[in-house]
Length: 388
Image (tube, rainbow, N blue to C red):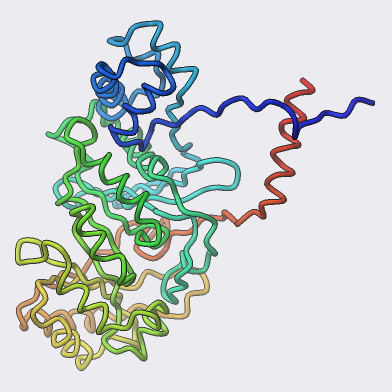
């Protein structure tokens, strides 16, 4: 019986995924992997960039303004890796929810919401699962599997544009105009990938979604907020939901580490904050929990001197949820108090509830795999391939 020495076998160099790479990274990779003359690397990177992000190309052979020999070399060294749309659901209101796969057992949900922002917004995920365990959020019931890469974040936008038929990626008459990091995970726990993804998606020669139309929502990772503003210039949203620490400790447990006073101090000094760049405070309306007139007045006092708008979010139920949504009359009374104080406080219309695509309802069935189990699976797959 012959034993296959997998550990000692020479491994084939892994293809580099070009999706999510910044232009400077792509240029360097072309020089190092494809022997592209450094004087031509910027031009070649620009060509590849335009094909992927302006025309939605999924293979190098389609890049007809690049010579055949270089296209062949690109195909040997690089890959254009997109997520697989495992499931697609369309709500009665036009909202589209995608279950996207990035490999065995790695899945996230993202949601396209029409008629939000300039044309339509894509709610993207930054992690598979979440560590924050916010008690009103379905995603919080799923343990963290891993962070998403910049390419996997960008891939969510490319998959949505595929489904919307939005290639080439023009700036006019588009369906996708806004990106919101409000899907699965805490974006500031994966800030490097979020930053790089924003760099790619906002580039004017590609998908071209303005940083002013890109919003990152955080539950309050205070130490990373200044860096987020400095490195992304994105709009900021705060998942607040309570006006005092005792309640927020329960609803948003990270508050025990970064209480409300520290969070609001970080908001006051957020880079670029002002009347033209207001911070959005998200406040989920929970029946009998945080929806009283007194709490509305407390909210107004808390946000004094912070350029802000307040999104009131009717609670979106999910199986086993411990809360109920406030009545519409109670939400309107709460909003009236906030409006009279001079704050814009739109009540967010629930979108995609019938397909569990609304705020706080996203979740996948991915589970964290032990490294030893993953290694066994990879070795078994390699052995099967060798035996073919």
